[in-house]
Image (cartoon, protein in one colour):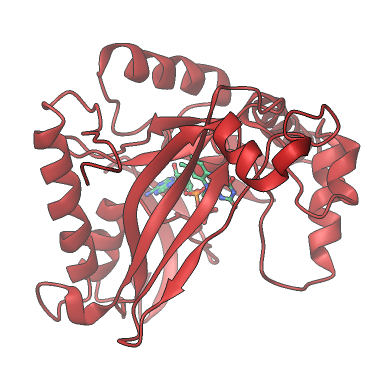
Length: 293
Ligand SMILES: Cc1cc2nc3c(=O)[nH]c(=O)nc-3n(C[C@H](O)[C@H](O)[C@H](O)COP(=O)(O)OP(=O)(O)OC[C@H]3O[C@@H](n4cnc5c(N)ncnc54)[C@H](O)[C@@H]3O)c2cc1C
């Protein structure tokens, strides 16, 4: 039977921790917008974006509908759930896993792997508890930097990869509606408008918008102390006043400060910590007008 070890808390306790962070700036490094039941997806916009073509994509959508997501995600070209509904979906999926005999343990951070003769024998949880295991799947996302370090220290082969980084750009939703729909802007059947922009420079570097959130909000999404990370999310109704989007530039291992496999993490930390200082050290993101930029 599968055992899921999750460093953060269940979705209800997690929602409290996230709300507390947004209200007071007190970050819980184990339970936040990245960590906890449902992973980074729980507080996401819930745009079900995938660039893969796989028969199992439909199965995933069907499971989500069974767990409470709107049925339209099965046929919609750009399916969107919204963070308010996702929280229920995530909980229902966990209860289904438990009903089928699986087990989920919260507050259980994997801090080590027991390896003998090149074979995994077990995992160490919270630095002390040993759980025997012959097969371990690490589905740890992109923010578990301490776990990447643990794997590096164990001698696991790690390879640096290219990624993108940037800022969030925000506009009044009405402005985007007008630009995209022209005279039809505001028509109730159209919904809030989206956009996608990209530029490929001859140097090979690209700048582009990504993860656009119509009628959404920019949120503080840090999981590490002393660093600012932003992301965008919306509720199912997408009825907030502003549209926001990530505005990104691609970076490659050649931009990183060294050839160390985790140099990309150092690169991210540098900019996140600078943003923290510029924002006044409170996890508020520094902000400026596009014209000033
Ligand atoms: C605010 C926000 C909005 C987003 N909007 C969208 C969107 O609209 N559409 C989209 O496609 N993507 C969106 N994303 C990105 C998307 O959420 C992630 O790409 C996705 O969640 C990655 O999935 P994953 O399973 O790889 O990792 P994660 O979702 O990060 O899950 C990893 C899990 O592992 C746990 N974990 C890590 N280390 C350990 C450890 N050592 N021991 C135990 N547990 C551990 C974490 O707590 C976490 O629950 C958004 C992200 C955020 C934060």
